[in-house]
Length: 329
Image: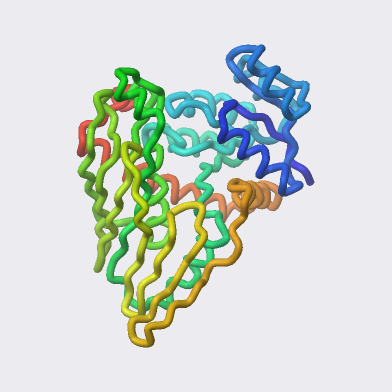
């Protein structure tokens, strides 16, 4: 069965989702939404789609099964709420919502209406991440980990020039933590579970959001340190340290290499296989499988992961006084 879907958002990430979804053979784009008809029609023409919408309610009322939401963060909750009320499945770009209360409301609404709400953390669906996760027991006792995702954003140049782009705007629920910091946090939670505590030393931008900083996740017997930022680059790999060796991963997403170094034998083994070039194909295939097979357990596991990550980022924002409009409601 091929799933028909519509999209909210016309940026590069939507293009990547459409390409990845179509490549699986399990999805077909049939509807496009934009605030202006001209933009909607231009975007739809790229994919030979005739159904265009300028209201969320109109899109949700279309004859489609799933809607992919990639709008600015602050719009996720209200848009997704309306879609779920129309009994459409939702693939929601991260961060799913601004607050935990919003997320719980959407999860409840999805259950009531018999549909799925899935947050699109693509990196944990990568085959090489799954290989890393399944091989982690070979490390024996884990002593700690160091994870990195720091990539200079062209939008930060706008900030330095006195502008406030959406990704660095409090009004649009922006900042480095919720944009790219969630990747290494999700990476850690997917591997090790919920940490006992978490702290964040953030660098605050002129706009009031965070530009990056250092996070510490404290587990029962070890810690995970995270370096994340949109204001500078880091070429440092990520590492996991264990009694039987060290695993080195080139990145926390788009994983090319997963190498296990044994300090006793001085041998290095490569765990990773070929990387999928279409970055969102693997998650599109898994999300289609969940919906088509009505795999409630897999969906619940992803929901629990999303909830934990959102609880962590909410606490880290609170520690640094990063307050969004939705926090005040």
